[in-house]
Length: 349
Image 1 (cartoon, rainbow, N blue to C red):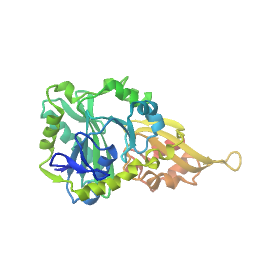
Image 2: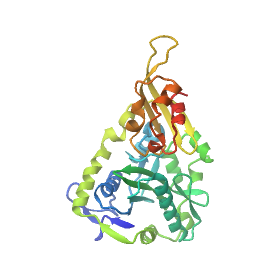
Image 3: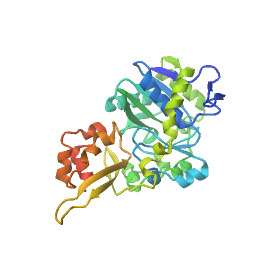
Image 4: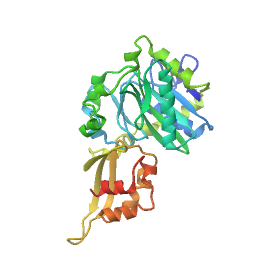
């Protein structure tokens, strides 16, 4: 695997305004690193790339999540915590300079095998440090029975991107205040709070510095280095602009959203469903679907509207009609683990 380095000489790179900046002392905002993943996937030759990054306090929510219900926005504003949306699915993540983010770009776009292989590699790296680490669940790496790394996946131009957290250290109280996970989700995970669900590298290896830990991971996971050029940085900065826009960050949820009913599907995720209906023309007849909106922490593998929801416009609001409209689709190719029958049951409960 190739390590994608932003620097080799003092970490100095040109910033947006042409000045020089040091990524170790003045980390870039999260959109830059998400755009770097895209740039590698879009423009670099076949192969596997890996890089690590850190950000000032930031809440990162999944592509299909409503930040007004999943993030404590008042607390984030008060504490100066930035808020951004990523293009992968999954749930909210709180990141700061004690939380190392891992990014992996691979040629494979098969979610199950990519996730499994990547999480196994990370767990094996931690075991080489003497930690009781293993890959578990759909996207986690744990030490013992507590999560130290959570990851998400998305497709881009035939490439797969896996990115996620690595908790070197953490402030569980601050994380708990910034994230507002539903009680259904907490019950499903068998924990009573965010605090009881996580662990950190520092908790187990207090004498290992964050710099030494990063060097260890780089040496174990990568066998060569690709340094980003000034042209690379310019293109990454261009791609990043979308992530800064209000349209991308708040999108359809700009007025607080309409969550409708909620349901959790084991092994798939939590869903909030709202359906805009055209009333039935006569009593006893079914209403017609104008638009369906799905929110949640599920893993999105391809475009949700184009792949599934657009084909429901104009369909009668019955389980049978929805199921028929989905008959030539593959919901599991859009949302990991989802079947057509389950989706029909979500829309018409």
